[in-house]
Image (cartoon, rainbow, N blue to C red; front, side, top):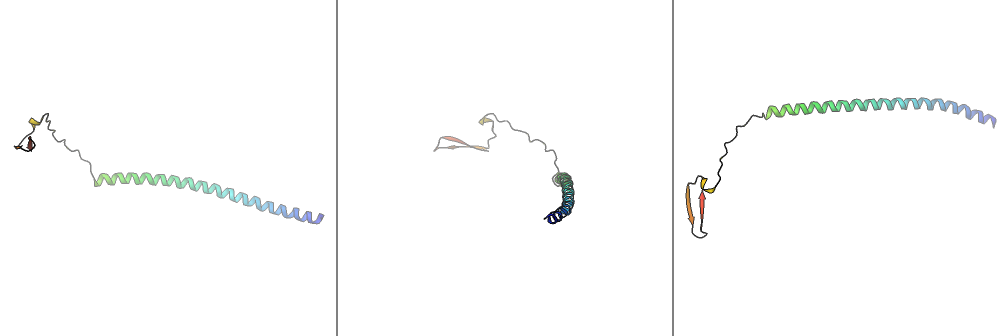
Length: 100
């Protein structure tokens, strides 16, 4: 029984060493994964910025925005101010029809 206890104790120390090595490896891998993730996010953000700028340049190239002169507004305050070509009387309804 004492011998079995010593054997188990010796195996535990060997297992403990490999467990410590595994733990160190997993911590290193986790740290590398975190760093890679941050670098990937930074690269994605830079790529988004480049794409947005390129799209804006492309839209400006394809659809150049030029100032359009304003159309003169005709202010008609009453019906009598409208330019009327001809006036016809509608006998059935009793109202005027304006043809512009």
